Every structure is written in structure tokens, then in C-alpha cells.
Length: 113
Length: 109
Image (cartoon, rainbow over all chains, first blue to last red; front, side, top):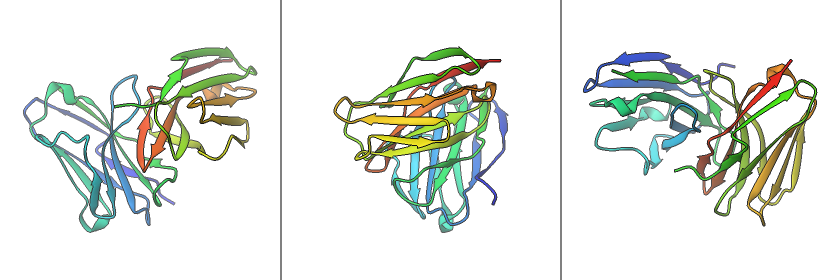
């Protein structure tokens, strides 16, 4: 069974440019998470989806970040415009339901110059 | 914001020794989970312990939970070089998952 797929794995952009990350969760997993991880730190939740509904986006900087999960499967996280401080690893995870273990993708390492 | 705090921040041991990592948290939880992350990779789930459980085992892993002290520990017995990684605890309250900053474990061969 395929795990959580993320693309791209690496992205280098200049500040003020837009960037998008894509995530394909494990088949059948209704819950999808986007996390941000800075070097030497643990993941910080940005947004959680239950099917296509964003049920927890309190930590998402809505002035520049947006996310969508059309049809309750794949998800896209976008930053527009990117700032230097956005350089981090963006992790996607999915789980079969609430209060279950999460399965993480390999992450997208973003570098903003 | 991160709720769990792992201790120590870094741990270096010899292969074959046991490794113990601790996690403290601030609010009541539904469950607590431990994850491992190898350098440059995603997190891998190790074990989940629910708030009404006190101890769980999985292979060489032993996790304890003390809800009165709001703390948990992860014990890895007979460590191997392949156990070298960062270990994170994550607390779950009403499906609001919060990770700590992690313990960086190095197992020297």
C-alpha cells in the first residue's frame, strides 16, 4: 500500500513569489493534516481536514496561506506571497479517523531566498 | 504552540544500552503518541497510549503514562545504531494534536 505522497520534495523560491505543495493521503483516510516543521523543532499544526471540511485552521496564517481539499482526497497548501520566515519543511499526514495514529509523508523542504 | 516538552533535548548512548526519554504536558489529554523521525524523513508512529492506560509495550519499546503528573516516558531497550533519530511525543486533546520539540537520540556502535 502506498504511503502519503507529497510533491515537490524540495522547492527554492525568491521572496514574494507564490508556492504550492500537494499531498495525496493514504486511500480511505478521511482526516488530513498539514504541519510546518522548523529545524530542530516538532511539527506545528497548520490545518486539519475531515473529508473536505477544514475543521481546525486556527494556526493557519490566513493572510498568506490557503489550503483546499477538493473531493476530500488530495490537498493543496499554498503560500502567496512567500516570506523569508516561511523556509521550513511542510509535512502532510493522514489518518483513518479521529484519535488515531497519523501517517506522515516525507515532507516538502521550502527555501525562500 | 507546542504542548509537550521532551527531556532530555539530546541523548547519546552506546549500542546495547537502554534509552529513556520523558515528555511532560500541560493540559488533560485523550491520548499520547510517540513518533520517530530519521534525518530528512517524515515521522513514523511508534505507539499510542490512551489516557486510561498506564503502560504499553511494543517490541523493544515501553511507554508509561502518568496523568496525575502529566508526564510520559519512552524506554528503548537494547538500543541499536538504527535507533538513532529524533523522538517526539504528541498529545491529543479533542483531536487537537500538539508535538513537542523532540529528543535527539544518538546510538553509537
